[in-house]
Figure 1: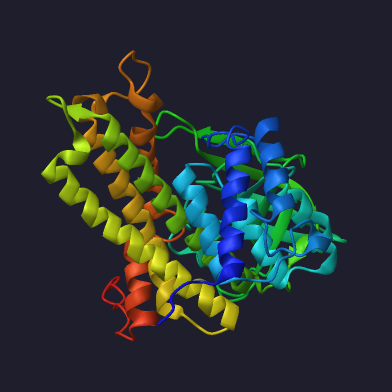
Figure 2: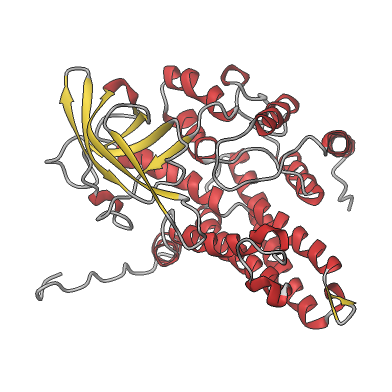
Length: 400
């Protein structure tokens, strides 16, 4: 049996490797949530031009316009990961909103937003969670009342990643307050510079303000900025959540982390011996490597299913749960490898790698919660994926 991919893919891989070699000094380093600088914007533009970012997004919307190809997508991901070179931007706008607009947006919305978003010109944040509506998102209370051709928005969002740097927000609001809670929700695109919006950063245990509170006081938004139909935002929101969970559990991130850890093990020593030769650490590395490979193969399964337009429900359901936990475990392993230096975080002459592993370890805890907690993901997998009985509702005052 011939397991070679064939000359087309061999040549494609050579082209990818040649591009990486020629441009390895142009790619910037991934950074904590800040607006992209000129270096990152130029890198994104170059990646799109050569088909290594926004590969299947139509040219009419600023993408490369290639047909979906599972093997070529895999080759790009693997070779960029091996080279330790970032594959371009993967923010909320690019990874979550753009595929939602491609699926459910109007032609006007696609033309207005997709090109600017994938290029990095427009940065987005997500307005979903509220103080009383996190896991039970459909109970959200931010209201949009009619005023001519506009809505007037009043309410509050919380845990809004990147709101302090965002140009726009894709936001869930209640447009029909008398409808059942899963009905009457609309999905709006809101300009963050609109009068009446206040952003308050929330400091986390990382020492940075990755999340924010966002307050709306009589914020005027055109009704034309609804994505999908009015009152059917829950359907649109679930489409976005599917893309969010795929982004949070991206196996390419895990593969990149694994390669960084292997490099670390070749550099660091204990009593003069490299960590890569330590049998205890090597055993842990191989177990993590097996998990990374399993998620990579699951990603191939999803790419194939998407290409053939077939359902792969279980393969989708496990991505966020397993991917986020795997990334957290990888960061924890890196900290263990650093020994006592792994406990240092902040400004120190002995800080290894500017504390990136410590930051990832702490930040990943938030990602395990975000986009649906691990407990909720397990419920979804058991009920929607495995067909198990629904979790019984708790008794309140003797009633369900």
